[in-house]
Picture 1 (cartoon, helix red, strand yellow):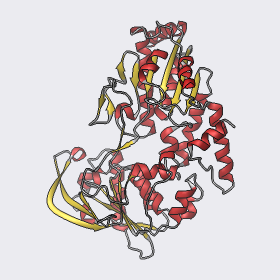
Picture 2: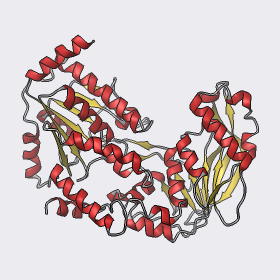
Picture 3: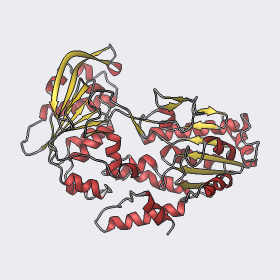
Length: 460
């Protein structure tokens, strides 16, 4: 294997070639890192729709999880390599077509992620204060498209549908004491809104049982330790979970189950505290209200199947109503197609691919190719794997046999359209400005949320 790779690399080094990576999130940067290290004489251009890099790390990671954002340091080192360039404010499908990119570059790798919401597809989803979790995450993280989100927090009860880490993140941010959030890079407008919030209780609703909950033990621990907040479980949800079942679980699931059971036994109701209430075996079937939501109708589920890890939920005729004035759907993200020529699976929300390969010279990685699964490390593994597959394909598919213009070709058509391109130096100006603004109020940074302002700073 080692000899084969060495032979391929010697071929790669002799070639004049260009690679374009579309999307400056984790998948894009990890792929660039691997390719830059292995394919040394290739120019790698990362283009991004927004003027700023880092994608989900910047706009998806919770403000109170700064340690997760440390990966930005690694991405910065990659961007500063001599054969890697970052070009922001370029939107594929609008400013440049996929066909044009493939004309300019020997290899195009699509990593633009999953930026759409999965719908609940139930009555009442259109009511005021029914909001996708993705929009709320974007709102408190400074994603420009969500800066004017209309969310009413002058309410006492919210119901979050979904039990993944994003759902728990949203619950935690909405229930965290304001003095804790003030230390983070949360946006100033969401901080102000949350400081005036009357929210006292957040339900976290899942269609299956405690053993199938998708959140990690880290997220659960944070909720259990949240200041001025108590976790209240429905003890009936744990009736059939005994030690005999727990002992058979994989270690990660076993640890979560043990922590939940420990919390169930120790739980207490404190009248002055806010409440986090996980609810299992329930599926939303109707959101009720005239203009604004005031109730959520749930179907009671039972689980079917012998294997605990793969048991499916089945709705019964029994229903339950809960009072709530805010409903947040957190049932997953999905990608979209930027070009009709792409073999896009609308149901799964991914580009159809084989180990990242879509066509000769065209690849995909990250959530666009796998669906929204795993954490940043999962994306890293996928990106490295796809990058390695690209390297193996270079001599096999003669990907570098034709000399192509690369960025000079792209730049020519962007100039004709008067598109302002933000390079790495432009991003560094924005970065410096945000940090300086944050220092004024004791925050690590205050993100710029207006694209026009971003461009003004980048070109100042």
